[in-house]
Image (cartoon, rainbow, N blue to C red; front, side):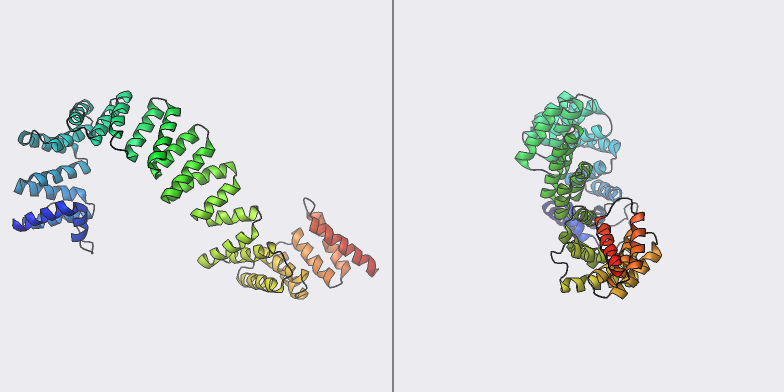
Length: 428
């Protein structure tokens, strides 16, 4: 018994969870479905180990045996807490009522009885017991228990009063959320609920729960700007990605690319989407850097190709030899494995337009045309290659075909056509 008493004292000082973690073995073993006949120390270790593994139904059986063998009041508290955790409400009520015969003034047992009745669906009894208990203790938690019981009886005005009483000493997220929900949903005091919850957040800070709740209330009323803002502020405080996701949905619906980009930049929630935004908004330098980062992470050659194209498109000096060498080398790496018409044509056109290697460039363009023979852009690239080589008749035929395939005018094709026609006329 001495060792058992020492363990109980340690548990009281450190808390059950900490002890459970300390004593829990590293290797997973099968747990017994009922306590094994061992000494008291063994039962205690078994109970704590089961709790550490979140096997609460097994832990409850151990605590029952421990109480039966010791009659210790602290052990009885532990057993009741496990009965509550496993939602064994009939047994919780039965055990608590028996305990109150011996300890009629013990408020903890009265609290367990109120909880057992509440969770077991005996709402009038739970309300009466919780109200009496709150009057005795004047504690916020007990007033919150009254509020929960009154909600079950549909007395929402009374429930709000009880939660407001609890709030005078407990400014927890759970109580604040309850007050706001009762006002908003049950009492239809929507503006007041939003103002109240906003004031709470300003005074005590936001959280995942409250940020999402206030955001949902704003969204329900059509105020999407504030809904997104509140969720983003909750993300900034908590770094919880679910809050960022809620804001992201709203910004996407609103097509607020600036807000989307800013949120994605700080959250890294969806880098591929951020890359698309950079491309749509022509932020080529940022896009190139992000695509390269994605390639280094995932080794997806499409990102390497995109990084090359965006680096070229975003450059202030597209004739820079170092730039051209870097871009073409990346694209050669991509084309060696992907065989993508998009990258084949882009590399080929660069080599042609900058006179790097016209014949090799035309070879890449011809490979692209094998995949997409009716692409007006690839035909334009090939025509430009023939123009660079002085073969203006072939160039003119191809550029006219390219123009005929376009669904809308393209300035670069028009410019190429003029240059090729001028070349053809000079040759004649």
